[in-house]
Image (cartoon, rainbow, N blue to C red; front, top):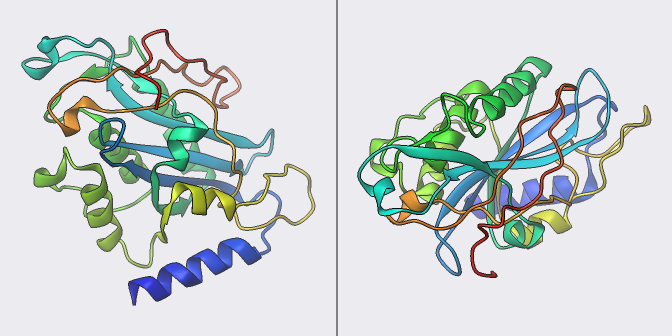
Length: 245
């Protein structure tokens, strides 16, 4: 049954469901498993805001700012992470939610609140890590079944549990990044009809990873908070980049 649902979801993405031009921004929740970096959770934002404006195409995760043994024993400074297109292609899209304008604004507020130097930008390996970040995003878009204490260091398992607890309220994806991105069309901000709001293949930035998943540390990348326009900013990778993926 799960395979059938995923096939139907992929078919809908490929064929496209006609929506108004201002069909809102879609948030997609992703996980990245062991391989050439640590497990990680993050989300992407794609579409056009209800209020109009430029197309939105961004992604955000959260990790520790500095790689010291201290993060295993006490709170340390945190920062936003921006994943590269290559990293996203090697990740897994779990599920999506089409946001209202108010929900999109709330997500931008979350990104700002967890930006470097802000009160919420504190990394605690046990309970304020990348999974905590996506948990808060899921709460802001109206999802439930978010309290999963045994899964807060297991990005994929956590997101699958949340998806299972919100059947009918999320759009199941369950696709590897390459397949998911290949199914998407370009975002358009013109008033003509566009495809399903789960759109836009390109995401810029640097590879993200979260040391909480293994109780260890790995370099991440810095990300700027949304600018005064309320739109996600263009970001550049930090010089603390991890070894090439």
